[in-house]
Length: 83
Image (tube, rainbow, N blue to C red; front, side):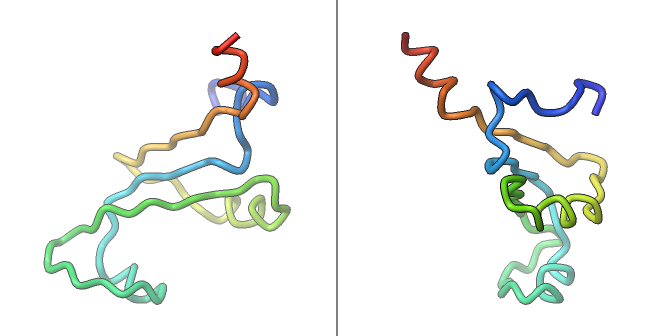
């Protein structure tokens, strides 16, 4: 938010990823089979803002301490780097 959001010519709105250490209970409650016995499981969430439902999903998804948000480059950025 402080950076001003995604830049249309540089970011891929269908490639937004959140990396988080999630508790096994939360994953099991979401229907994900978890066999880990540790206190946390490395989890990656993908958000597609090209799909309108992605906006509603993002609205109810809170960022926690130690989360990492990664936004992939737009396909045209790689081409421009090549040129």
